[in-house]
Length: 578
Image (cartoon, rainbow, N blue to C red; front, side):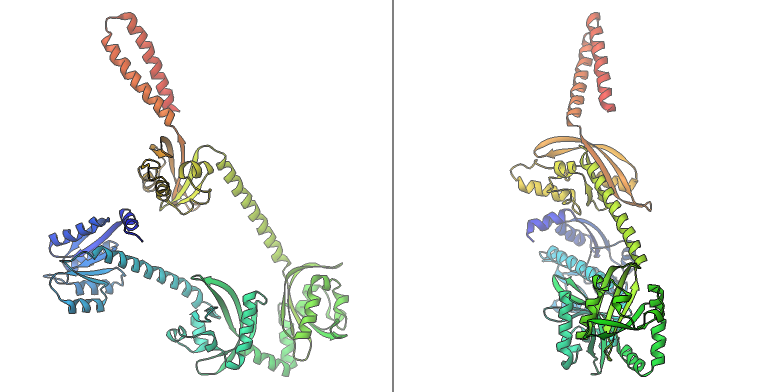
């Protein structure tokens, strides 16, 4: 960032500084130095622990500048007080008496920088750097907190891994427990480190398929713990972009117990049947016939009977083509054939099944048993689809309403806009975006301020300082409306495209549905010509009054002047009332 750019930023920033200094002249010297570099400064000087403690509790400070040694206080004591309160405020020590060893010790204890009073040339550079560093630390803490809230409340292990280098970036508490690694140890790992060497090719192949979108879940993935033991997981992964890097977010569900359960179920038909019959999803077991060209129903649980409105004894032993005649058109039959041939499970996403008996929405998951049968687990999502369709319809209505609002506003000649509480645009109609801001379209202003467009216009026309002054010279009436929470009407004037214009502006608080003021709503119309006419009328009226006074004794002329004054006054009042 250039010095000019930094100066522009500083000119718009009020810097709140807490100065720990017993000599007022030294404190003022520091303040003047900071002001000379472009900052506006609001400061407080303290020289005792009691005063500093009160200042920290009563105000939010951007930076603390402390003399190393005071009669009743010191920079180390001040720093310790800040640390006790767990405040992350840039702390800069400024002194004229101590040596380099003391400076190093102060830095070790947590001071961010150290300057000599006789050489303050680096002061503002240090302030810039430390404020920026503090903001970055704040953003990192916020991001980490958000991640941790999501991660640490999940019952499954979660990992974010960078695709290119296969480095593990983040993990939640559950994955640390699964793997047996500490947070610090986990940060040094790669994907290869948490999978056994012999199972790595299969694992990477599954992850590659997930990256390509070929599969949603990577199944039966072997995972190696820190102690060398192996367990198995299903990984539901999604491709994300984090810090401009392609990453895979994987949800690791430990299936070790499920694998053991399947083995036990194969040994104990009773337990298998209990599981089979008490599932909430429909389950059907099929035996392949004619080299996988037909499939005979061998099992049909109670949920399947309920979902399909069929009795088990009526379907066992029959072909799926007879019981569900539209199964090929539905797309499920081809999955049966593939799963039977490859042994690899597949999901059949939500789709509409329709035959002469049923019209329903279904989701299916198909897998192959070790004995050769294939199993389909499915759910009737018809009601869910109806709800989704209703939501889609409402969303469409909302979009149409939004479009209508946009068209209504864009067809008005007046300027209409809304801003948030920070002065950033949330909406602007076509007239405003083109006529006032010079924006590319009605969406460009969103998130930007008046200053952004004013500076852009000025930079595009450096030869004319008065090409565009709105946003800089107008009064900050937004803050007045936000503070008073009342509608305000005023004239604001300035230059647009090199021409002096006057706008009649109405601004109102922008209330949300909870009754909270979240910004301002504004409407403006060009009254330049009207105000000019009013000015000329006022000028003429004053001239007539002077002439009237000078014409005392000339009765006929006085009567004429009275009529003209009356007409001018009526015209002026009409203009004011418009």
